[in-house]
Length: 442
Image 1 (cartoon, rainbow, N blue to C red):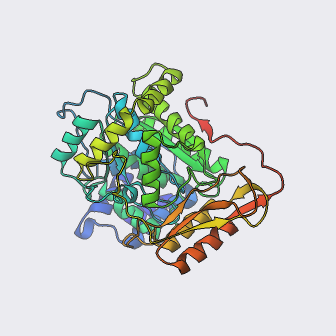
Image 2 (cartoon, rainbow, N blue to C red):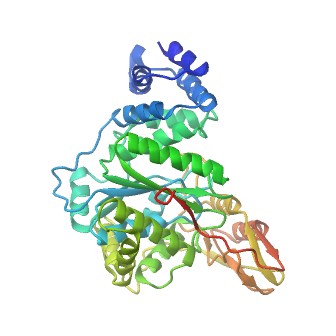
Image 3 (cartoon, rainbow, N blue to C red):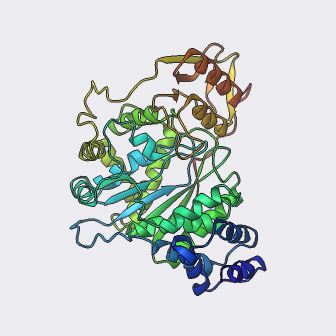
């Protein structure tokens, strides 16, 4: 049976629901029912090369969703709609940390199932675990209590959620089949559907720091996600946002958490980070019925920030999941700091004309702040802060950003990497928008 399914897709055929169901059963089955790694890899490669029709991808997504536990919130007593956001990943992307409490403060319930960083992109769970004691895998009873109390909980996926995806992704990761749009779509949406959502907003990143490096790639993925989700019964919108520079001013787990706290409390809100956060919040609020239109939705999100309601929700969520209870205190010192901090100085006058964002993400890994393999340990203290944005005007000797490192030697290497990642020209580059496309606008 596996060989027949593989052969059909290898030859460009369309798999029916029974064939897709047999494949998913083979991912999670035992004994003779279990597909071998070679068989799984062969079908993944066939899908990468031959593609999938929308109906095939919908069937695969639904089968993977039901390969494990599907959360049911109907008896949880939530008063608001259950809504979430997913990002395809980038460098400095700490949007989830602000977005979940903003939407919660506006009446939504956000059980945000997040992941860890792998490769040059950071992971939301790693940022949350820079707070001592924060529990990313709470028992369901505790999770429900926190959601009732605060409206949001940023947690990891249980091993029982979409186990077929867990095995398929591990095999794709080592067989050069990660780039398949249908398989990416099914992987993302199966976990979101299993989380019992009523609405989902996708943030598809595009640029030199993202998985999708061109708009054509980003549009293909955004269209696939929106259409397959709709076919599977989940109201979904997609935005495409720029990742040709670090989002915000920090890259590194504890540093990004510190920036997020400052953002929520109003200490500093980097304009691009604010634009993306508000755009996603507005889509979530409108799509879930909490606002009648984008203008009112953005106004609600801004008010949640200005009033301090979003910051208060975030602090309660952190405390409720075992983290520090004094997150908003002026003297909060619950984030570890690296022993070595150095400024990286501009060698000449000019403007930052371009940024190699991926190289900065790789530099964070080299400092110890990311992982190349799923079981790598990370140091939450290290990374970059006070990064200047593309278009910034510089004078010779002015800081390009700060390196936070475990040693002087590490800091020196990271500083050179930052210098190499930035192109400084005599003239400023043309201004570019941060939110590039929305499926709501077409």
